[in-house]
Image (cartoon, rainbow, N blue to C red; front, top):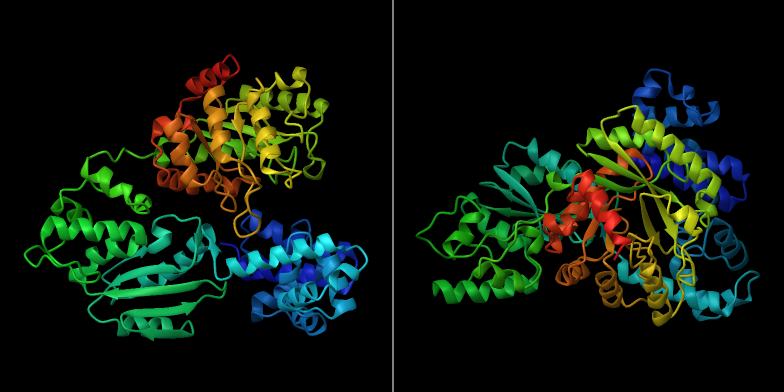
Length: 568
């Protein structure tokens, strides 16, 4: 397991060096090292211990010395000196869209801005527009971005919470006083953005558990609750229950307010008993499992992901909860990138990694020629890549490699290759990567035009959102889904944990319209192929069944389906 704190420190060092005005190559050495550690999951401590860190490309003598100090002491004196020279709070400003290290340096040096609050005040006072390279429009955009940051404060992406949650879970597993435990709340429902990482713990007495966490974190204790914040600034809440009420609380603490209110009403009508959130009211029954609750109430079992809306209870009453898609149903790994564009691993490495995860086929969908920033493929490189894929398929790797592309949707809605090139691909994922500021009608028209292309098979990351970083562009999503239904096209559920796009509410609408979904990781390295499983959980939240997900098909059936699309 790689050291996340070290990766964060190296990335922060790179940003601060740029703000300080150091040579860009020196600054990039730190961020590049962080990328290598993360993408290759390097155990830096072991490499330092064996004296092998310097053998890895990108780790020069000076950097190895600094990392060795960190491994041995938990600190890096170079970084401590750096933050004494450049305020560490400036890093948060660089994360604002449109404001990188260079502009942050200007804001710091010209206006003395150190924090986001300083920046907001300067925007309100009109000081930003007077700076070179800024304008009143920039100032307005900055203020809007700051409002988003405030609205998102305390929120974290689902995947980050699961990573931290696993650390908490490992502590709970090794604590003898813990009889049972489970995640609850938003995480168990697989909500894309999380306020708190919540656990429910069954134990006779919470004190021994509290003592364990007290030795590791700065904690706050309330009645039947333990709260603390991790090193990654993620809020954790642990609920305590006696073993008798554990399964009842597991159900109730998982639910959204809307679901729970409807459940409470149904429970009281069905049992003629008063609902209690924490204590199971039916004294004649001893709960052995969460499923038993549903059996006692004559309800079909409702998976945790569906416990958002009241409709789940109505469907459970009617025995209409479908068999939702599961990880084992997926056969195809669609929309992954390789070193041909901006990926970190070769096509062969990506294919073997997908095979090892149990997949039958993989579609390489590198960036197209317009995406110069991502080393997009010009037509001649497309043909070269296809030759490599043919050679790899002839080697018998045990997985079929498909010739895909992620083609940019241009502002007018056209794809960025000629028809002669487009017809060379096994499948085309069409995505918007630029010109986000169109009006709603313009963007909707643009995407529908791309959907109408006979060469488009899948619409990629349909709303363009980046969770807690960028809102969706203005687009009529239902109109887009309607167009996909009309033209028989597939819509992507981009499983990249920063996206999870299409939003789950629209997955439900797509299902109603008969639009098939492709659950795609959008991976740029083989370690992130597993992101597809976040997508599966999110698909379940949208009520998707295996028949709704196109990459649940075998490779032959998938290719037959893809070929049928252009004929509709």
